[in-house]
Length: 215
Image (cartoon, rainbow, N blue to C red; front, side, top):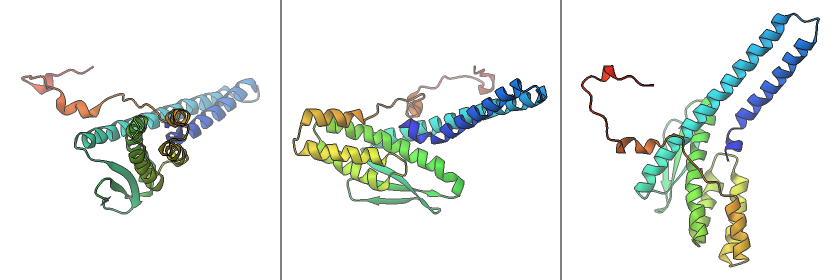
């Protein structure tokens, strides 16, 4: 999933490759001053740093989405996240699932919001996959139909493929084979930092917070 979500990083990598090629060309060209090669090298370092920053921000969005998913799961809330142009959050429910649409205040907000929504939905999708693995095909189908309709990321083709397998599983058609193909599309997800643990951690009592030295 992340290779699709982080498409921006692919573009950054292409820029890195291009500038590295130019830098090598500058080193091999005696007609170019050495300072020009240094400019190319600095550009490579800058783009790599920007790519690392994009990656870090996307990881943080994923972990924040995971925190919200954990809170909702503990409260037995079943959400699907999407987004819309506007300034207010919208909520819709059929009594079972709730669709929460986040507002895009500025055009530049859209990629970050889409990442957040896609990260959250991917966690819910993994839970639906495990239910399907346990034989709860109808519930998983209901959820994936919502994802195909509302998810703002580029995983809809995968969701549609999963729906195809779920249809076959409901009909008891080659259950072992189709379940295996279905689960091959399921991605186990892990966290770097579990923000949902913050409230569970017992704070260390200190006399003066200003004396705390963090690594």
